[in-house]
Length: 414
View (cartoon, rainbow, N blue to C red):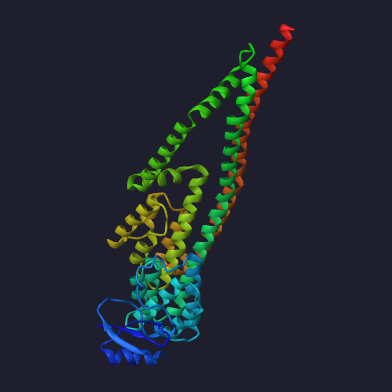
């Protein structure tokens, strides 16, 4: 369909898609916009109708880098849309109402794009998919399931709940690692300052005498001289190691190796598995509750695990289910899923209450994940403190041993 550029009094305007100029004028007037000029243009654009009525920019609406929505804002948008739809508002009116409440230009453009696509006969799920981020595969599939079932409002509510729980989990993980990370960085900085500034001054005075440094002092002095003389080389080595590690992690084989290693670690492995299992259970529960077939639900769920080893297990499960087998058996064979979840899935398959049982299991595993995060938070700081204490203790021992050797030498000569 052709594109028509329009202007209103004051110089504002935009672009609208219509069958002809008369249709474009009628659309604008129906939207409450009185155009001063409407003419056909050749360049493609997005936007129109209700978007123009809200004063939203009507061009360049696709591929805007996420629309300015983070995970928390996306969850809030889904919850607001669910509330409006459940209250009985038509979809277009609900989108128009939400657009009026948005302050960020990116989000207003996003809503304008959705309204434009829906106005021209596309489902909301297709409009979301054509925009891209933040509407990922999970949100698009849930929206499509809600449209197919006629319960879009309720499914939007389930989607908002899922996003909020994932956001809470992410915040818990960030909170669990923030303090230990800060502690580790401050400890490294303190050690570097002591070794490069304080220790050399003390050792210079002792080496001026005839005292032979004890081995702890000699080791510390050698390390201090190495850091002061070749810090640039050490920094280059560290940077090279970091770059190599990042490239290795980004490679498929490297990511798989790192994720397998993380799962096999004593405390971190359990935490990684609990996080993946909690996401898997809650997402699969939400998708099956929305009426999405189990094979499609498993494929979508795979992308939320954040661990390549667990994703590989889901690929095996999908292959088994596609060939007519059960879900529980390949999950049990992998050894990566808790026995309780395997039993719940097995019972759900036999009873036909998969979505209900998964919902209860999701709550249980989310509570278990929170406990694992608390355990990780409780264990890691003392471990770091012990490591720092050992390093600082060695430095103090080296300095004291050198001072005592100097005193003994002075007493013998005196």
